[in-house]
Image 1: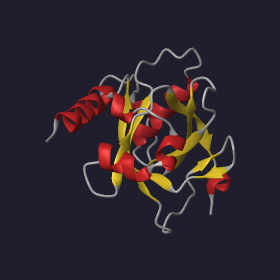
Image 2 (image 1 turned 120 degrees about the vertical axis):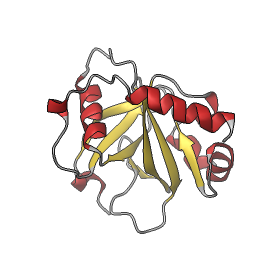
Image 3 (image 1 turned 135 degrees about the vertical axis):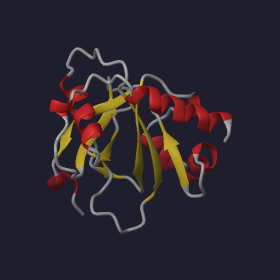
Image 4 (image 1 turned 90 degrees about the horizontal axis):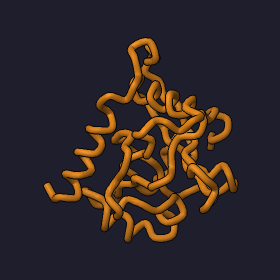
Length: 164
């Protein structure tokens, strides 16, 4: 395991520990809930869709959305991404600009307080050069990792907003 991958796993594990979510906050059914991920401010003005299926992950995302004072320390989304392949049941979209990305989140790793610099960027950066992104941040061919600084979940997204 490379140092880069070790730190990704370490940060992901730390992010999930002590996230302030109680058993009462965790939905009892395992279904996919979609979240809009945007910047804290509006510097780049782009967004992407984060699908979550784990009840604990959904509860944590909802807690971050409800935290209007931005007191949660572990807010950054760490995830594995890949190119879309046409089998998706939803569109990974920049809802702020109504742009459909040609990549998607394939695996959620967790929420973190920080990530290593190579994972920083934004949705448009991945779109602009997926080959570079996958070659430099991925563990498997055709995949990469993201951990954009300054981006977090902002709200839940209805399936109607992102259906094909």
